Image (cartoon, rainbow, N blue to C red):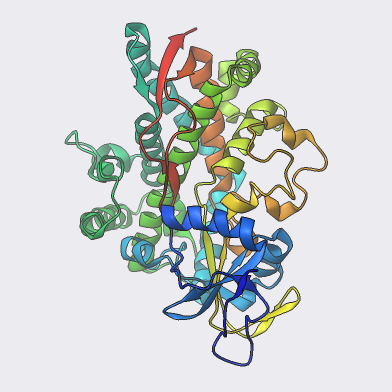
Length: 441
């Protein structure tokens, strides 16, 4: 029988919840991902894990309870533990800020991420992917392998920097070096990396000051939007807030999309029938139309979109969400105590056999079924509620155009054996790269 998890420290208890007896500190790492999978099998969809640091942590694998935490009672929770390293990197950006300040920043940033605003980036994203196709043409001709994760990481970094800085990107890399290349060159997110990344705030600050000094017309890039955004009192963002939000956009907009695309290459290459169906769909498109629209009209790349959705189901980059209860409040049939840390894993929810048919199977067509997922929040690769990912539409456009352009040119073969090793850090990503053999079409 499962062991009770023990008391929470006040009148609201977790005595009725199953869970392990020994303390375990839940964190964004491989040990936690493996342990959560095992505990879900042992204890079900709601359990408690003792902690040496305070009240037991609650783990929620029930999408209805996740909806209560993230959407319906979102005001009763704040961001939880596990973001210490992110805060060191990003300061008080939208990913980690809280309360009234977060709400103000979110309102000011939201217009820049509307589909109509993002349409300005379609041509740039198209051309960057076409340039990558040219770089991959030589190894394909030589019969040499291509490491897809490195390629998608470099690609998405350039795209996010050009989206933020626009014409200032050329000035940023004028000496032939990209100061933000450490994001692709250094896999470790340790204190040494944080110190190097933190120094780049001066680079961002210099660009902001130059923009303000120029006093020219508004630029239709993210920085231009942020510089002209005003709150309800007609006040702009402070310099510090501007810098933190730019640094946040660079990190969040680069690593998550790159990781998803790397896993997409593995899955597509390992499933030739899926690859052939995507290629038939993209071959029917006119390049000029694709360049202008980004494939964002719903039916143009319907199958490609289902493939992307299935990739994100199996390998959600943001695989572990945390919240902290602000007050004692109901959660399903239980009462959760103020201060309790709650963890929700999209990785687990999106592989839950109660809500998905053959959940470990790669099947893009499952998204045509009316009964999948079995609950709306059994699928949330971009989180949910007020704090869902602000860049969801841009990420979808990047992934859609990338696959459309590259699969028009190449057919990939997976050179690995079985599923690639996974690194479960802040973002889920391949641990050892994604090696492909590309065949020109």
